[in-house]
Image 1 (spheres, rainbow, N blue to C red):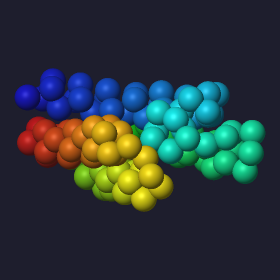
Image 2 (image 1 turned 45 degrees about the horizontal axis):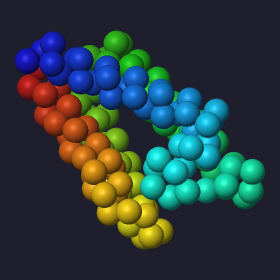
Image 3 (image 1 turned 135 degrees about the vertical axis):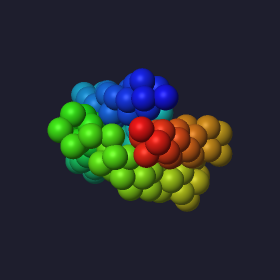
Image 4 (image 1 turned 180 degrees about the vertical axis):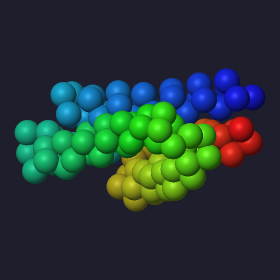
Length: 123
């Protein structure tokens, strides 16, 4: 179970880094994939960059916590960070995005993050 817990945590942290990179360097495609399309050349450009920075920083912080504070601290971090994809679910639904994206991507991600937290607590 330890290998699974650490592997899932590292994969989630690396995925956050990937999302951050994508929102910073491919904001239009990233916004569409998020479920709420935005024009990066318009007013939304700054917000897409903020999301990219947020997601990338979360990935770096997760890797640092796992490496330097251990599984228990990472579990608490994952538990707290699960609020973000739950919130993303609501944002997509509130702004007319597809329910399939809201639940199939964001809500599912929140569940996976909670599973990761549970596995890390068990280590």
